Length: 326
Image (cartoon, rainbow, N blue to C red; front, side, top):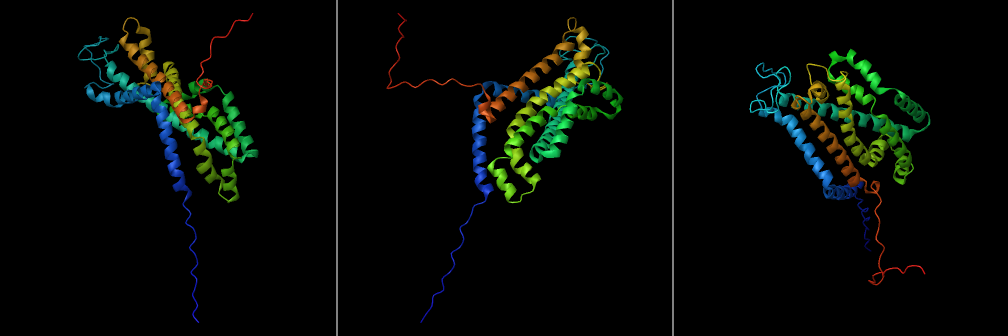
């Protein structure tokens, strides 16, 4: 009598969740990219910002003048073949000065927005997820910073730290620029922590910090991307305002704010000393705002204006004119 040993059936292969989620994420990325490409203002703004970055970081290599060079034979000279955008009151090349100031303003705006966004996402997500005393303490700290006069504090502290460089100025702008974003992230996190995928991760014993990093922050990333983009323009405007009054970037360094302040008293008599820096500032801020609107519409289509839907016609019948009441 022979016996046949039955081989146990192999367990069904379960595909990893990451492999299944990757195509879905790529599909959402393609849809968002198509929505962004369909917006003419957003694409134009992205191209303008790219040109401004190229102008700021590549443009200085096309001239032999540095922003610190002085031409004593050309004081307040109008734009010419030697000085493309003219010179200022002490003979410095305006083209070199404006591009160096644009570099500094862009770096300050980018670093301030990045630092403030990271700080807001961490504090807001932790406050919204943990709740309880953690939420109360962090919310109290956020509300306390919101009532502080940020402009006045930066104006008092910044001159005392002028020897520390412009990085300290970036830190001051970031410290007072993250609270509103943190409140929004906190509200979104309180809603997300009640979702099924977060509840499932909690029941599986996943560490809370891992849940925040892997499940909470990716679901608020679209808001953070849009907010960080617009925050760049706000940080550049804050830097320009503070530097205009002498509380931001300090000489001999320059930024768009210091250049606008230096050329404001000669805007009518020597307009090239003022309008090149002011014009680039206006173009940059407008482009950032249009880009932020385009990213918001691409990543969150429901945030736009409600669209009116056309009522379907029945059997292709065209409605005739309504009779006037008798």
